[in-house]
Amino acid sequence: MGQSESPINLDMKYEWYHTIDLGNGQATPGVFDLRDKLHNYKFPKDMTGMRVLDVGTASGFFAFEFEKRGADVLAIDIPTWESQDFLDAVKKDLAKYPENDIQEINNHLKNQFETAKTALGSKVKRLERTIYELDPEELGIFDVVFCGSMLMHVRDPMLAIQKLFNVTKKKCIVATSGLEPTIQAPVAFFVGEPDQCNWWRLTPACLTQMLTIVGFKTVKQLPSFYVNKDQHIIAHAYR
Image 1 (cartoon, rainbow, N blue to C red):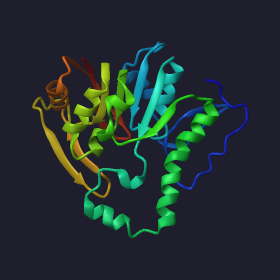
Image 2: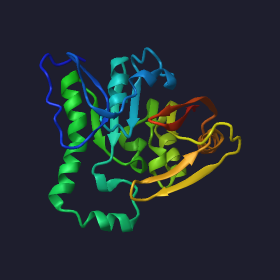
Image 3: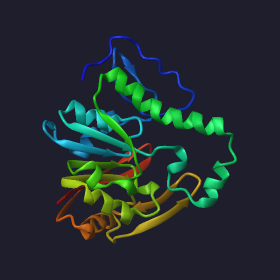
């Protein structure tokens, strides 16, 4: 992965999701700067020879990090803004917006990733799929599957976790919005912000039980941490 020697134009109308170091003193102006939080995820330092799937890649921060560590990476994200797990009523409201505005947003979602990929000289491949469309017959299976900050955005997190399991060969790492780890019960709190596509917050016990019930044999909870004042829980699940 060779970084570009020329400055990259980062002047985009809409906000970047991730802060990503592009080299030459440049970094994308992301809403979420996770560079000093990587240690919380406990990724392998050397991922050489691993096939890795990054589900919900957004700007690609994690996908490029896995590639930097030696992995062969496939990144997945929704094809359009409207493809989020919105209610039908919200989708009808979105349909009222000018088509050019929606298309501009959709182009921006793709351009973030492609701009960073070009700047980094990356070979990561990006496919447009929802988490519900993860299919081992199409995509194969992966040594490591990573799903970061996604489960809170799906109405059916149980189905989403089943889909993650289906494409996992060895390990699946899941990070999502969580409730206080002092709550020992397997609780899923309904947030219910349909216009923002925010649905659930889980306790660590709930995430563990959901991962176990789909077939993961061992689940290890890592210490929770905060991302922009939002508490995140993280689990490593093993086949």
